[in-house]
Length: 266
Image: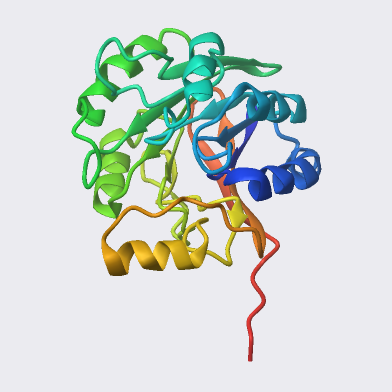
């Protein structure tokens, strides 16, 4: 039995998140003996999008695939970057003709790993159905590898839980991203798919999900647009580790990562 060690880093938020990844990712790769590293980078560039600058840093650190979400296109530079870098992917279920790739097949020393990016529709844009989109892409990917990882970028917990039940046994692991709040429900579903509702964010926690607190409060109070500014303090790294059997394609071990852990105040 060959086991593939897969490490995923949750939503990287601006410079604080990038600095955290640059400081600690090499040690995490070594600790978990990671065969493949995936990171959600849709907020890596000042909290909006991922450009070639952030992409190069992440790939040089050992990241193999960068996933995205609803903020992937927020910067013109990130739009151009998607056209030219197949390892940086966006949600597959955007309408036909949207540039960028929705999946990528990475080569590792232990075989191929397919990475798929999907986006939910509840409380988000009315794009193509992520459930039906997964049907056709999994049929295609199964001809290449049975190790399939899914980043499901979605707002609603119910939609994420529905998706894992829909894909249990069809993919190796599925993680939720987007809400920036790590959940403590990591588990292996009955048919062998590893899951967590949301991995959480890698960024500043003295904030409102990465945004400077006052601007976020004003947005709720006044119901008007506020300038998005990335917060800076109390930075943590969130991630998750999967050990996957390459023969069966099933997760056999899962570990949630929060570094450094929050200190409980008495």
